[in-house]
Image 1 (tube, rainbow, N blue to C red):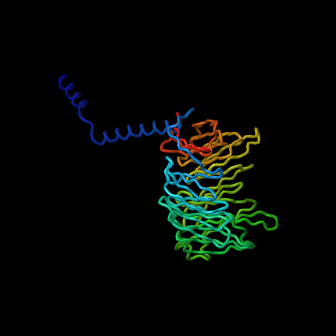
Image 2 (cartoon, helix red, strand yellow):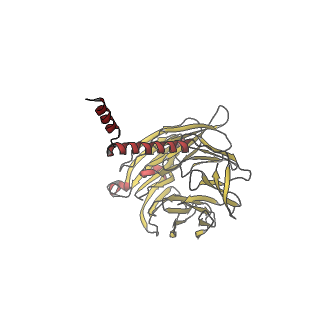
Image 3 (cartoon, rainbow, N blue to C red):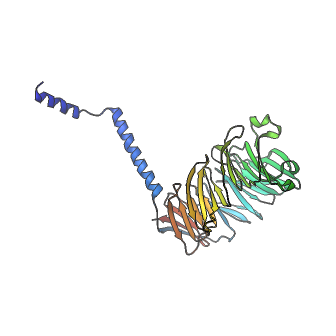
Length: 386
């Protein structure tokens, strides 16, 4: 074949357009590279300072607590609750008198109950959905995404578990006799309102024993005695907190062990994590849990974070002065002592470390990973990290 024909053939192959399949592969690769670069940038980005972008004056009582609920702010205390946007505009308010108000949330539903009292109110973003008055003091309560409320009460040697609709209609009830099962101390309700978890403690003969009772108010539980579909017992351990998390898995937080249960019709253990030494704090959200342990070597603390499958995410040495540690809604770990605020990413990167001279009561993520809301004694500031 003549040389000029060979060159012509080569040029035609070079200029031949790419097939649609190859184009899609190249485009998908470029998109993946961009997303990977953006993820790494967010994961490893650190900030040393901030700028205030907006300020709203506040005049709340010193005992007021704050909760981020559906991208707006709930402030509540003994005399009532106010639900505002982050510009300070009132969306609704609820008046009540409670000695020890506590708040539980599940998606679009919010429950305020008086621990040790008899009052409960159910709210949504739109306002009040119902009020419930119990006949016995409330030990603990929880709310589902549909507004059902589970309440745990105590009267002498008998505990009572009751399930209500948001309008106060009683859906189910049961008794727990402490001489048989122990004293009920915590309760958790699944997002669909069908599963219930109760933690009990028994101190007979000086031995500590905790029991977890799983109830099912659906078709599975209807075939069981007292709707109980599972029971787990733990010696030499107190389990002061139980909850339902993502995909209606359940978590039981003990003083030396954290257990996560799967979401099957019959509860089974998904992961167990044992901890030696003193646990100073345990915190969780729907996807992760963390512990703060005393570090005997230098008097400080060790922070450890895990996902709900028990996989270790990171570990850090931290100071001993913190008064609050929590997950933010963006799955960051936030530590504060009222002035110093430290934020860690899930990769253990210290994203932000700053001491606020005026003090900070709470810090809440805002619209992006660089913007937050600072709640101070007399004002609320929207800030941007830089």
